[in-house]
Amino acid sequence: MSNSETFSSWENLVKKQLKTEDIYTILKKENLEGIDVKPFYNSVEKPIPNLPKIEESTHLVATYHESLEDDVFAFLLNENVENLVEKTVFVNNKDLAEHISPQDEDQYFSLIDVFDEQNAEINDQLVKELLAKAFKRNICVDVSLHQNAGAAIYQQLGIALAKTKELIEVYGAETINKLIFRIAVGGNYFFEMAKIRAFKLIFNQLSKEYGVNEIPYIFAETSLRNKAISDNENNLIRSTLELASAMIGGADAVYSTNYLVEKSTENSEEISFKQQIVLAYESIINVFEDASNNSYYVEDITQQIAEKSWAFFIEIEENGGYLESLKQGIIQKNIYDHAVEEQKWVEEGKIKLIGVNLYPKLEQKKSIEELYNQNEIKAVRWAQMFE
Picture 1: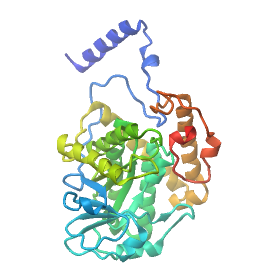
Picture 2: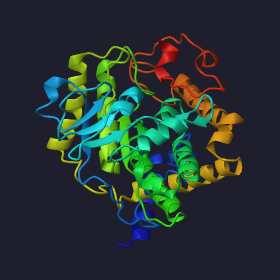
Picture 3: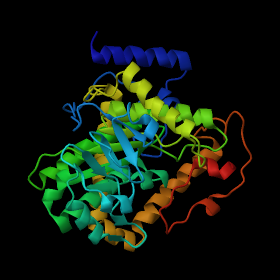
Picture 4: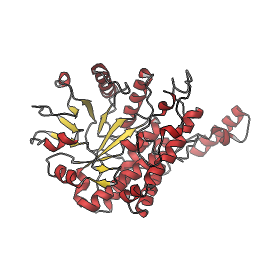
């Protein structure tokens, strides 16, 4: 049976089941990203080549604790640890980064954002200090803040490219392979998979404009945006799906932010890390290069997200670049508009958050006006409205 025959027999079956000719109005799946989601896929229109990652298998990153030293190979470090050898270390503290001098056998990565979003400037002194260090990746381009502030997927990726271009303009094209991208992964399972893949496409496209053929190093962490204080178990399930999205999408490193919102414990940190261990060791999804390649649905939304993200990047450039757009308040307003629309969907139940606006439905305690500010990029959890 050909693709067209498969499609037409599916259409006829659904028309019969829904008792209407107008099935697409009923089956249309709305989303705030402006992505066209079809109810049925039976082919890939524009196949995407296999999208590689830099690390052979995804690093499973734990917050450093001495009890984990024997079993864990990659750590997120907030304070100095003596005699940490033959580990992969992601440095998460500006003061610490300034004092660390890695040895040859160490693999150090900086997760310090060198952009000061509030003052719309790059911390030039910090960039120069970090570039002078023998890190595997010296400069972090952080868009996790933007995701947690409510930016759309295409906005996050467009901003990541605009920040990259800003760095290249100042520090030269040789910084391209010194960058690491910190991305927060939300709960829209397939969209987030496609987000990581789409970023590889557009970053590669940007790199070619500077005469190189690079792919991005992606550090993916679970989002805070969809987590709730009252709902630890649901948070744990949400972040497990987010980690799976990141691994299948092809992140180079994954990190689980603590599922206990605002009250991390040693036990919760251990469980957060074990989520990754179960996924990697029992499902083995951290070793595949591009596991969702050729999935009809994922390929289609990857292409759409890539196109929208590139268009948003061009829009930022036309406004004078990332820093200039921040100075003018354009980026803040773009994120604010999307975040507020998203929060309205949570309020109306169109975005479902179990234990918050569904099973049970909590009372609203804060207004959108209290939560968001159109002049500031700040992290806001959906559930804060009800807490």
